[in-house]
Length: 106
Image 1 (cartoon, rainbow, N blue to C red):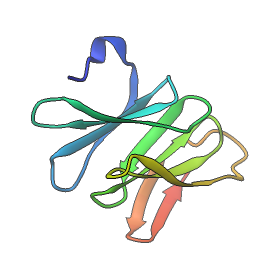
Image 2 (image 1 turned 45 degrees about the vertical axis):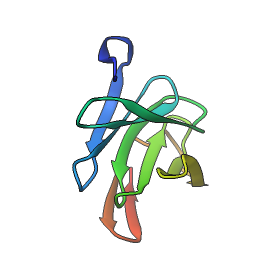
Image 3 (image 1 turned 60 degrees about the vertical axis):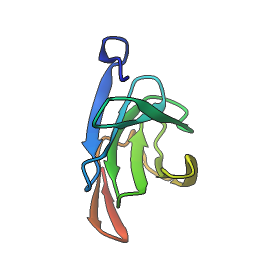
Image 4 (image 1 turned 120 degrees about the horizontal axis):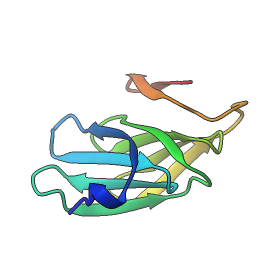
C-alpha cells in the first residue's frame, strides 16, 4: 500500500486505463502502484537526485524529469530504464507527452 505519510510526492499521474499510478518525489525513486488497492508494484530507480515530474507516455512507458537535469524513460512492464536524455541546463520541472513519439520537457 502507498504510505503517503512517509513519502513526499512532487507529482502523481494515472495511466490511460486508470489501473496504474506513478508518483515521484524527493528520494530519486518513482513508485508504480495499483489504483484499486494502492499496492506498490515497482520502484523505478535511476535518477541521481530528486524526481520533480512524471507522466505516462502510453500505458507501459513513463517519462520522468529531475533535479539531476535528466529526462528518463521507463518500461513499466520490465521495470527498467529505457533511456535517459541529458543536456538540460537546469533541473527538469515538467514532462508531458505531446504525441506518441514526442515529449515536452521544461
